[in-house]
Structure formats: structure tokens, C-alpha cells
Image 1 (tube, one colour):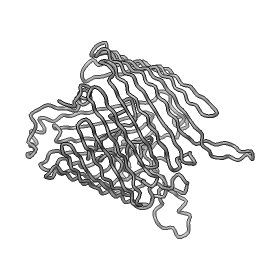
Image 2: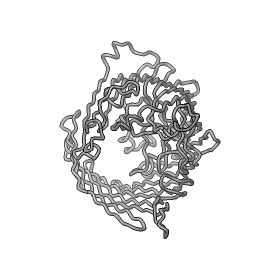
Image 3: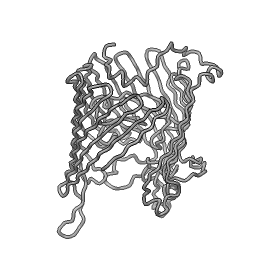
Image 4: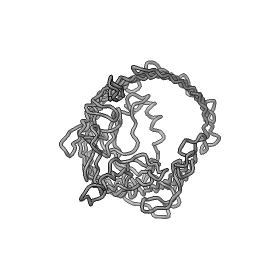
Length: 503
């Protein structure tokens, strides 16, 4: 197939299924579903051997182990029922329905149905939304800069997805549906009501005449509830969200528009510190955007432009080249002004958000010989407004080069060199003894050698050697890592991993 390389096929093979297909106009009966149901249950437990100070002082109320249970029932791709229960290290088992705590601290579940006539996807319960390049709306996992300099940069939103992660960050709770329309059109609508963690500003209670709910200062995304203070923050910020999208998906063109509006049960007031000036505040938040992707033979052109409620515009524009097994390249420019505040965006960038960043990224990957490949990127960016601990606008850059060698199917190795430079905040004392905030240039360098050898289908070893250096105007710090990993697969359904590291 033209444009489908062997490397691409290996990447997507786990997600492909061959078969005769199914009649999307008729949903199977319960007997058919029950006899063909795929049931999976995963139980995971982990803990640190060297416990931190929180356990030694008794601040953490629970046991140091992390416990995760996952239950998933699948019928083909048409029915999926999922439940995830998770307890982080240090969290106690509690029963507090008022904060959605039922033994396990984190509970998510969903029922997803697909191919119900014109209904392409229907999700009830917990779900995430991904549209366009992620400026207006993107929840869940998104790959950033890494060894592959091209593929992770260009994203294609998957619209509505069941949420099954143990991460307690950004997702919706309610219902969502995507309906197919004539002419390669589809429309998506969703509604959500979810209580999020927040730090409340109790100083407002001391003001004369104050009668409303305490405002929230910051939203917490870590999801840890180990101490009384962390438990007190759980579920204190209610968010009700409505949104939708209209999308056209043709053979060579994809166009769409997406938007959402959220209302809060208490005001969000991030405070008066200068770096927080443009954050989401008030009783509501919203964002709208339009996005497009055009496929032009060997080229892909893509972009998205978004508008914040205050009238600020931001966006990204890029072009990618795919020359099969010979070369891949990408060029992307992005502009996220400080005023483009967003609760649910996650576009490509240095810090993952969609605010206070302007930059340009260039990536290239070449297959220089049958068994050799080289990839490299250079990213230059700046923040036009203040950042946390950085008291003025700042700038930076990052570059990485990777040389890969795969002499045999059972042997692969690569050498990676990486360098970063950016302005970070610092403090210094003036002649009068006063502490002053300032900015200094910080640089990081690293070199890594990694090799992987498969003795057989059952045994694989991985060796990694890495050196890193960080420099500032006043100090230099070096780091060293040597690790050896072993993977044993005695059975297709059983896999054991072990690793020892010296650093």
C-alpha cells in the first residue's frame, strides 16, 4: 500500500484487527454478547522500599503501597465496560460518598457503545475528549518531544474516548455521543458534572459582608489524598461542562470546530501574583476553535486557531513530509498568548499547556542506510509573560539527535545526545542585604547509549548508560546512570520485568 512503510505497520499492528466486519445497523442480542465477551481483570500492587519522611512522621494516613484494580469487558469494539479502582501510596481506605470515595480513593468507570446505526460512539460515565491539535480541548495522554522527532508532533484527535486511567487529572464525568451525518459529517455533544480538588482561600471569610462560598485559589491535579490537608481539598470545586463539535472527514481533508463552556459552583480566584494574572478566573470558562488537516500526496498540512472569551487568539500551523522509508520531516510554529487561558487544552509545546508560549519546531528523520537511521530536532521558544519563579519574560531552546542501528531483528541500539538552554528564576542578595528575584541561564546536556538484545522469544536484556550535566553561572552538577534490565516472558499472558540501576 502506497505510503505505508514497514516501520509504520509494526507500530500500528497491535491496534489492527482482521475480520469480516459486523452489521452496524443491528446490535447483537445478549446471548451473542455473553458468549463472545472478553473479560480482563488486572490487579497491581507496588511500594517503595525506602519510605519517605511522610511515613516516618505519621503525616500520611494510609499504607505505603499503591493498589490498582482494573476490570474490562469487551465485545468486539462495539461494547466496552470498564472500571478502575486506585489507591495511591499513603492514602487510607475510606468510605466517604460525599467526596466520591468508596474504599479506593480514585474510582472511574464507563460504558461505551459503538456502531449503533448513526451513533458512532456513545459513552456514559467517565470519558475524555480530544479534538484537532488540542488547543481548545484535549484530555488524556499526549506525546511530546522525544526520540521520534516527527510522529508525536502531528496529532489527530480521537473525539470521545472512555476514560480508564488511574490518573486523577483532566477528564469529564457524564455522557457523550458522536453521531454520523450524511456527507462525511459528524456531530459530537457532551455534558459533564464533576467535583475537582481545589485549595480554598479562607481569607475571604474574614472580610465584612462576605456570604458566598469561599473562592478556590488553585485546582489540584495530582490526585493524592494522603494527609488531612489533602483530603480536605478533595471534591471542593464543582465544574459543570457542556460542549460539542462538528467535523468533516473526507479522503484528503479533515475540518472541524469544537467548543465548550464550564460553570463553577464557587468562584476561581488565582490570586494577585503577577505570574497568575492571566489564569482562568471567575465563575465560568470557555474556549472555541477551528482546526484542519489536509493530506497532499507526500505532504500533510495542519493547523488550529482558538479564541478565548476575552478575545485573545492563539494557534499553531505546521507541515509534515513523508517520503516513505527515506525521510520524514516536520515544521511547526505555535503562538499561545498569555491571555489564552484554558482548563482543558493540551497542545504541543515546551510545557504542554496552551498559554504563554511562542515557538517554532523543526524535526527530521532520515534512513541513511538499510540498518541505520538518524533523527534530530531543534525547538526554540519564549514566554512573553512571567512564569512561576521566573519574574520576567524568558526564552529557551532544546535540541536532540539520535543515531539508531538495527543490525538484526533481535538486536538494536541507539546513541542519543541532548542539549537544553533556558532562562530560569533565581535569587540574589544586593549590597544592602535584600533578597532580589532575578533570572539566570541554565543549560543541561546529556548523552545516552542504549542497546536491546533478544536471546529468544522469552528473554530480552536491555542495557543503558547515560551521563548528564547541568550548568548555571555559579555551579555545575554531573550525573551518571548505568542500568541493566531483563524481561522474561514464560507464557504469552505472563511477563516479568526486572531492572537494577546504579546512579
